[in-house]
Length: 342
Image 1 (cartoon, rainbow, N blue to C red):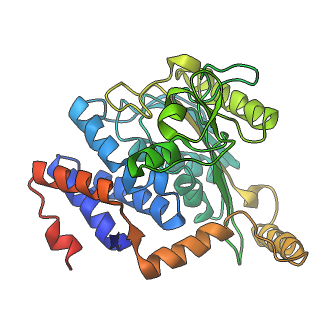
Image 2: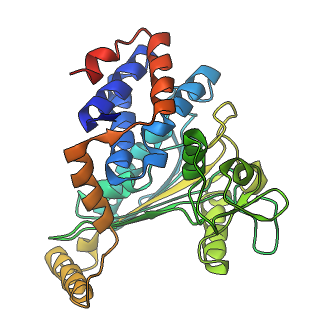
Image 3: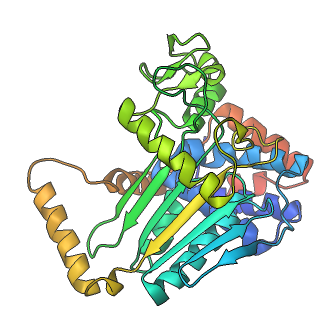
């Protein structure tokens, strides 16, 4: 079935409030989740919501935790999420990074003791809306085997970069693996196969079976290039921010385990480098040059197309996922029908 973005947002927000999550925090989680579904990142949208409920039940997500700043200078900070919702922690981190960037030109905030934060591009978008450049990286539970190996050691380690423009949405948001782990989980839930050249089974053989892939490993995108980028992110979002790394990272895919991954959130203020209007004009000139070379897309075009489509036609929820949401609604005595039947 299909639901609207507003229906999805209401369902998530009201169920979380039933579980004693504050209205502000529930709204952030709902906004990030709906943002993923609108952009077409369904692997990080409402399909992840049951995972967050499991985390609340297991007390690996603490909705009452206070986020604390452990180290700070004029341009950087290290924050301890104390296992709050990852969405709330990363939202707080980007707000702090932007505040510092407005003062010094750059703000960098490291995060540890957080949780799965949904789609990384939501937070780089926060910077775009303040006419800043946003960069977000994170490590995750091991899913990718190093080149030449078959044991998962490195995470799918996403990177998102958003750049302000006068006319275009300029954003890249991607895993450094050939597929996000969430896409495998989604295929597993739907009973579908995954594409070829995405994953290996536990013996290191190519597989299109999501069950075998989740037990095995996901390939890095671009072979050695994706592996190298993911390797570097593992360090920048691990040891640098006092978070776990490699096989020590837990909790991003298995919510019953405490989440030990890390994030690094950055904001750059172009107005501190040069004139902001000139910067945005030159960004648009470059985009025009690229688009003038043929029928080409720039990073962000597909998301814009998906947003228009999903706002018009709704967000699809498969049967298994809907059954999970119905079960959660019954557990917390939430009248789901009053929302989806409007």
